[in-house]
Length: 606
Image 1 (cartoon, helix red, strand yellow):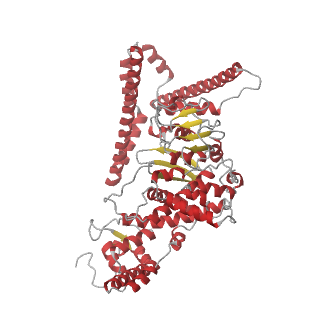
Image 2 (tube, helix red, strand yellow):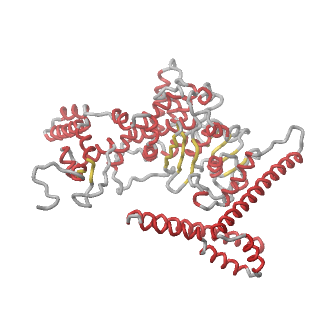
Image 3 (cartoon, helix red, strand yellow):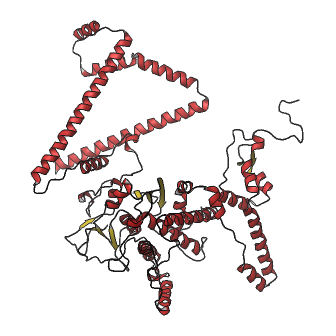
């Protein structure tokens, strides 16, 4: 009898009982593969990787407990009702019974995902932790063209735009935005909501094309769940700052397609901006204007959608949200710094800059912003404008009372949380490198030159001593000299501590070797003067003869020999990754040296 012989009818054990293949799971649930895939996405059930794949490596396995979890879900019965409904409609059309088909089409079976949200996310913090992919997906579909006849319904695209605008309005009003970075894929944002860091990606404001390489059925299933999740989160966040949800927008602003502009007005006043006693004919005209404007060019309509500031001459224009908010995470340090970064600055955006992003970022950091187009809060000729964001070399008219900078200046100021000098961002110049705030330079082992410059500016801003009233520039310079002298004293103390630590390690090494003080003095007297290369060779030989290093190497070899093949392979992969990182750093340093040498050669020749 074989060792693992199991008589017929005996219960399965081990991996054969814990895991089931996808084909058997579909047969077990008595549903189609498309319905099974949709059900797994909505319920959060994903394939597993068992240690031993009983039925082969080429099959997909699921945990048997997950399949049993799906078996009793009410959604299965709803999907069956929808399948029966489609068959009835098809049969009615086949029999040319148009009345019956119309009745069936007007009463399709529907379902809600509210129960699944509570089931998958027991607490609100759990939902916030899983919000990254949700926001990325919603913003992606919000950027798609709303055209009838495409694979994505127009209503779904409008709903995604509404949800994304509501989310951005909350982030801007509560000053929760922390980081932003422009990449080839799009623009990355990171916000901090109730202590949770949420990062999402928005596509560039370009014409999107629906390709055939993507399975939109799977993406639309994810989007269906994410729409419900983001709606619940927006509801909770709006109520946390005492704002009703869903917001009731001003029909006049809706007619201008300034949806988020209207959201800002609603959140600032906490009520319906329009007068409920106004004439009904006026509202009808505004509705007609809304329909007419919805047919215009898509890019022009979305210019005002992310505007967060209100006209100063309209009632309810003051933004009271931050002051009246009762949220717990508003008065912390980062939110306070973000709220005061652009305070007192007034920006104007030219038509060639990425307006959607800038109209979202600038108000989130306390700035006032307008744009070139219909519905703008103030015109370009406003004398209070401090900065104009442009991205073309020549201007029709230049105002001497303001600074003209490139859009990258806004993003770099936000990441550095500091108003950077504008000399490097003047129109026509090549701006400094756009550094990613999501990269830890110390961990990578290479600090870019511009990152060091920003660090010095930040240190200078933190340790800056303002001169007393009545004192001139000399007193201010003296205070800066005192700061530099203190910095030099700290550096000198650190150098002395490093020398003492090095001396301690040398004495410890000599103690292990059993060397006495008299032997050390005799060796120093007998050592002749040697060139630097020889000293380097001797130091390397001394390192090789170091007993402490030798013991560490032996211990490492012993630990490697005791590892399994899998762990040894992982360790080798980690070592290869470290070597690649070192080689990459060396390459960057060499490029930097070449660039500096070429720049110095050009200066000499000129």
